[in-house]
Length: 114
Image (cartoon, rainbow, N blue to C red; front, side, top):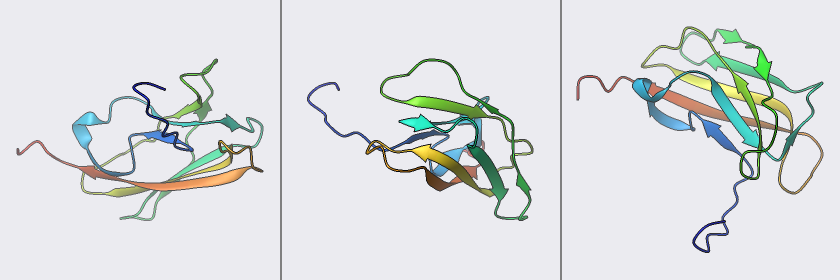
């Protein structure tokens, strides 16, 4: 917590949900939550333009980063102008609830013309 800010989202993603410049998507994608069921957690990335789905391999970097545990994954064939739905199963939210599913959409935007 810095500067008195007590906002603590249940999860953080890179790239984040919503529009994201293709040039800002560097390397692996990640999701930070309070915890994972590492034996059962799965990630599916679906290209909403083509309906192609992939399940990239997962990595669980050791340790905590801030208040979160992270998983990293590397989808392939990411194309500007397409939207990608990311679905992650068997995660734990801040409230310690039973395993949950997190789903969000990344809109990959080509900003090279600007």
